[in-house]
Image (cartoon, rainbow, N blue to C red; front, top):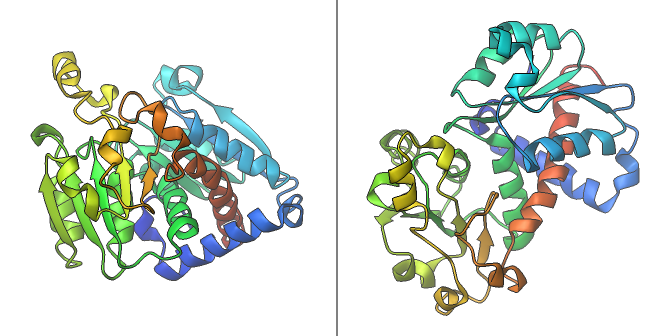
Length: 307
């Protein structure tokens, strides 16, 4: 059974195929409107979500399928002590494919080992978020037309930012990538991402606390929020939450074709004044997320022989 737990589960060629299908869906939506008729997606969200959960549901509905599931752990048997393994086994009796978000790293992997249908990791703690990475890659492809020879700045919470970890892992497979890691000392990229992803791939990277210093070099600026839910100490969160706030003033030295990305939700880290800037891509990312998830659902259901 094929699952998507980590972006590394997909080859470069498979990612390109998914992007091609997503672009075809954008161009020819009616062609795909009935392909999943009679199929069911289960959304098992043990952690709050707006974009990811609704985009999965919208994706399945626009493919002609149906959706069942829950949006919080309290409304599932997890509140009674049921294990992730048992939940996955039970739900796979009712659905053709599962999308799971969980606050604990590794939970979707456990689910995939006990499910009789494909499992998609919709975010596991501070670990990975592969479908957001696919949405990011589709956005980059549509904005830049390439994945190689790009300087990408990641700014904000790089320690707990699963979207950052996944996107770095994906981009490390392309040539000419330079990564600029912009964060407070307390929220630096985990050392394992550097030792297991960046260094083996020979990716050039720099660590800095200054966004302004590297702004002129960036082709892509990937902003992230400081995640309150990952902190054990409220004082630390309050001290760090506004470390970086992107304003029009800070963009004065940026390239005219800079792409400003953000996985959302936004708190204070991007001024609303930037929403009107043609370089702002974060709401495009939201829409692209639906299309790439449609492509992914199709791929996994086909691999499972269900369509």
